Image (cartoon, rainbow, N blue to C red):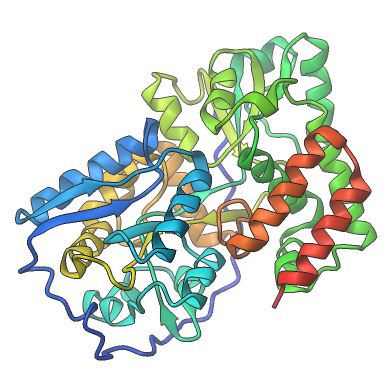
Length: 427
């Protein structure tokens, strides 16, 4: 049997009152109903399940706004690593798209500080979004009383996707998740002894994705979140131990990890029965389904061992850039992505869950239903690799250190670099 993601208690988030609503900004007062022409939307959803989700969203947009034409400005690259560089250049040169994708949370801070995006608080009020988005999400979206993006979904980072065949061949019960990180490492030893790759991994941001979840497992959610808000000392012995845990886990990954450019080839190793595990966000669920794999028969999933009751969270969201060529079209796009129809169509295809709490669980897969329940009850932690925990500049610097560790294996160097980044960027 497949093991569902656990449902443990979540501390109630503080409700927020929207501030700054009704301001006289020309862009946010544009009329989406009378807008015409093209609407250029910038994303990194260029292929696979991500492109399928975007296509589903565009179909709803076309139905809801027949006078507008969607213009796809996607730039390929998992987690937006390539797209963000292109976007930064366009914004700096005064050539913004009508809307661009950005992870909700700290990632938006750089755009806010550069005065590149509009406050959307009045849009939230007009669409009554505070009534349908959970308070924990509203808290994450709000910066100094204002809101600058509209989420299309919520993803979970801390999921292990496992091959039933590989685990059974190694004498491991696929229906039962390891109790903690040590138990998982012991199981990876069994897989290695059976001649298969224990943990599939790619390069670049996927290594940061694994790193954040081992930190979360080793430190726990409070100390993990303290790495980003100053509550945890990066130079402490507990962080040293967490990085040593990451080093151990990294030793069970495929030798060609640095040559794999994105997440899908690593997940494919699990699908093909060449690897036992892959730590990836729940966009992997859409890939398994699209490739005809059956949950409980071909693969199983559970939280990264040691993170039961924690939802490592990220959300894709969209903005209204200052100087957008078609602000009315942008607001129409934001209406679609925040609508019940848009969120249902998009998330069914992408594997994530709606940001709206009024979505019907019956419309979604078994995995998504369990994730929807968990998001209501688990402790929420912000993703490092996907923009919820830190601004882009901090993430870029820390990512460089994590990627260098892939070849150096120098625990002290990684810890020192991470501590220096925290000292530079932490508020």
